[in-house]
Image 1 (cartoon, rainbow, N blue to C red):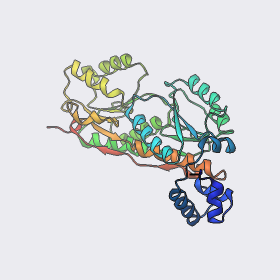
Image 2 (cartoon, rainbow, N blue to C red):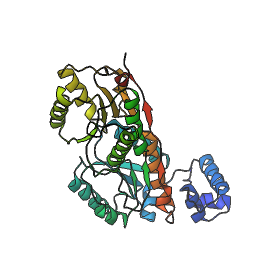
Image 3 (spheres, rainbow, N blue to C red):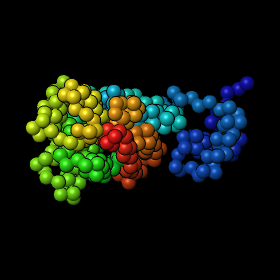
Image 4 (cartoon, rainbow, N blue to C red):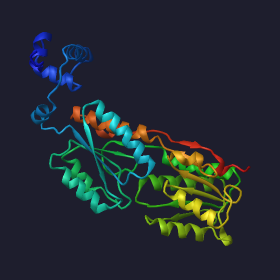
Length: 337
């Protein structure tokens, strides 16, 4: 049996080979009705595209880069699943690059990726990323879409969640649960998500007339052992908080271990809310109240926008930005028994 080619499809449908090719690539230039005709015949004849030849003709790799700080965090693991679902559906592949929260590593990765290995990038920046100059240089050559951790001064698509509202709602929940000395554990003012969560925290404290001296923002580090000691010191009797909000998931273990070590009861003596997507939140003792982000949806949306931009060079990227709300899930760490 002879190989089914784009030329054969074009002859049977009385269309140009260019139209067939664009329809198979889901181009915005081709009408939905024509795409349906092309895809129906391609399926009927069992057409199999030559991905390698096609990518050479288009000077495309059919590969996108995903640049993220880590994979240990459940948010990024779930987001990667969403990204992969979107790219595989369109015949693309994803290459994962880890920055390990290092700006130099982020810069080196983006510089390397301009050599034609990928067609574009999805990224979430490091805690050290305070400006977007290196990303702007990359974006002059290839499209980039931010998700979660973004650079606001770069004019491109951003997929985020409602971090300000989440910081506000987490704080309001603790206040309504009876807390008046609330600590927000932060990691970096460079990150837009952290600054927005902190801004929501500060607004809720002011709106509910709590003493600002008793409600503080404490900066943690990337060193887990240092964070553990910092939290233990924070929990000493002199000025112990009765509510804690952790802005990142990895602080959860340090909080629970410090309270266990100091024989502090959660939630009787201190109530805890964490920004976290970890599946184990429900089986912790006590189960953990969380701000749960739509990680899978954020990853899939970011990939969908990037792939859309690769099909449509005239796409105005900033207009594709979206905000997908997170959820406050109340569990036993903030409920008195």
